[in-house]
Amino acid sequence: MFVPNLDPVDRDREFNNCTQEQRDTIVYNFLFVKGVSNRKIDEQILGLDSDLSKGWQSMGVLHHLGIKNPHKGIFIGFSIDHAINVMSQQNLTHFKTVIDSISRYQKSCIISQVFDSWELFDNNIALKTIDKSTFAHSGTGVPFGVRDFFEIGHLGKREKKELNLFYDDSAFFAYVQMDTLDTPRSRLFWKADFRDLLMEEMPSYYDLFINGSKVEESKLPKIRFTKVNGTRFNIDFVYPIEIEEDIVEEIDGDEGLALTEVDPESRREGKVRYIYGKQYERDQKNRVEAIKYHGTKCTICQFDFEKVYGLRGKGFIEIHHLNPLSSVGKETDINPKTDLVPVCSNCHKMIHRRKDNVLSIEQMKMLIKK
Ligand SMILES: [Zn+2]
Ligand SMILES: [Zn+2]
Image (cartoon, rainbow, N blue to C red; front, side, top):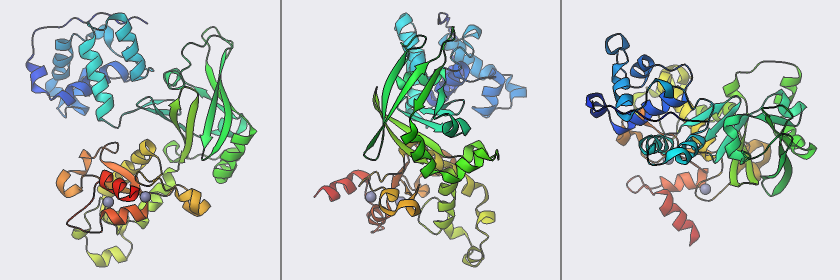
């Protein structure tokens, strides 16, 4: 692919009116997001009334950077890493501002990029939402944007690359193969042993697909791939429904919810959902995002509930806020990638054991080492 040269303008009023974070978000959206427009960016990212701003605010930022119409949506369907590679190879110096901007964006937010049923974080964590073909064909398509993750960009027609998937201490053989089309598509295949593992892990979903029932995609289990190197990927699973149920159970805990504002009587009556309303739902969403990114093992001691408790522990983990809400302010400001960490119940209790001396993750790790 070829990226047209940047064509910067001197006018910098709009540019200076935005924070660096806002500029990075504008750049990312303009280059990577389908159906985007300057008006939409003004409205959804800058919170402006687009009837008044007419999209000029974001356009001013983009034009100052030299990003114009020919660049619009140029990286739709590509990963951020791919875009950085392309621009670096074409002309690193010329595209430096844009490269810096999107890599900052990638680092600072939870940002995952979605490609069909895949979701990609930082190009080293990928989640595949299960579907019928996961069970029926022992494999799944690998969209273009996810190819870099599996490091298969160099493969041609019919070629394949072997991989090892690790779950706990077991290795599962798999491979990615290109098909025979002129613009070949890539598919990931695994063997019966991995399919059996999936069926064992999520039996009810297997039945569900066989019966053709519909479940909202965001609620379906996800296979989480963590890249160790180009041929080795660790596997674990994310279960959104179970995570949501856990929050309901944990609602009396110390995290995330302003319990003091709630009348204890009504809480006991089980009006929880009603009372917490939007904040509760956002907490759910943040938690699912945190687990998608960090996984379900304890960050401090690596405890894995499923490993010890079997089915009963499947998908369970507590979530610790690194910056308690009282100091962060709005719940919307929480970044699940940098502000939330999964911890086991023991470690969590120890972190908070002394209210006047809440320990950091590093301090906890040191404690355990001794
Ligand atoms: Zn722990
Ligand atoms: Zn905590």
